[in-house]
Image 1 (tube, helix red, strand yellow):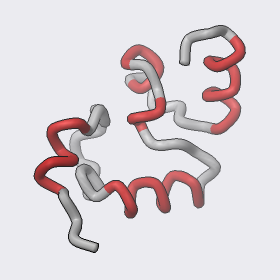
Image 2 (image 1 turned 45 degrees about the vertical axis):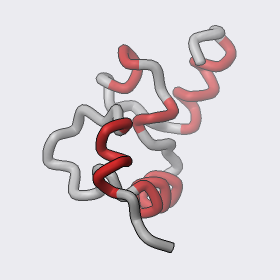
Image 3 (image 1 turned 60 degrees about the vertical axis):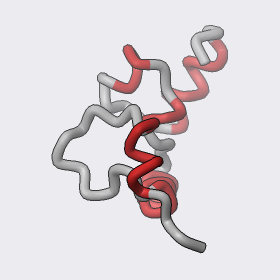
Image 4 (image 1 turned 90 degrees about the horizontal axis):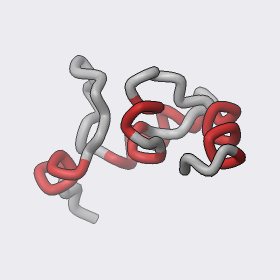
Length: 67
């Protein structure tokens, strides 16, 4: 499968600028899941900017109806 990095970058909501995985979704997901996190694209903008991408934070946001 061919990576669509250029296309993915147009939809990437990650605000962490030095990220080397931007646009390479398979690497991003793999990295975050390995660290018990979800990628930025799973979070609303205000939550993404906190950089708390933990499963626990995501669950709190779901319970609060913010995701």
